[in-house]
Length: 209
Image (spheres, rainbow, N blue to C red):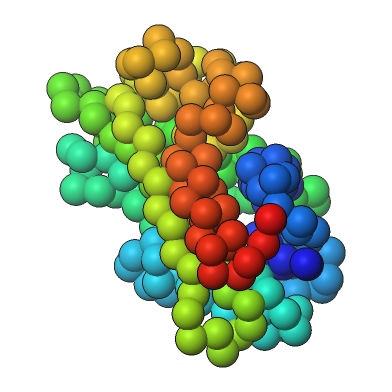
């Protein structure tokens, strides 16, 4: 079964392919099919994920899955939340998409550290909401949510991962997310928790696996 991923993030595609490996799915990024990214005008992860999934399903003519995820910091009232990917207003360089993403990530992390300067409460969580639909007008979307709790560091640590991974410290592991190997991250992350729920729902409702 082909499943269009409503994202052009190469690292997110790789993570989801690994997480959904137990199921007979061919996960294809929407960009490979010439599908442009959907608008994300909503204030909640679930609304944005559903909008993105419907857009990809409509354009792709079949099943689609979307992940809307981000960082929610307690001391910032849940910010950056759904604005996590574009938290900082920064001029992006022309050219390769991953290079642009690295510039945006660095700016986002710098702004987060600025907002939390002198703040004692560093509690935060990564949130992932997955929505899968069989078609654009599927009346029964499958929804899964995962939360990964941690604390925001005062300086980046580690060279792996992407986004806010270098600033997200997981006390139980004694490492930032960017210091974890891919296998550990894929087993414990917010996206892994959401994916485990989604796999169960797909097996039950879509009769996969």
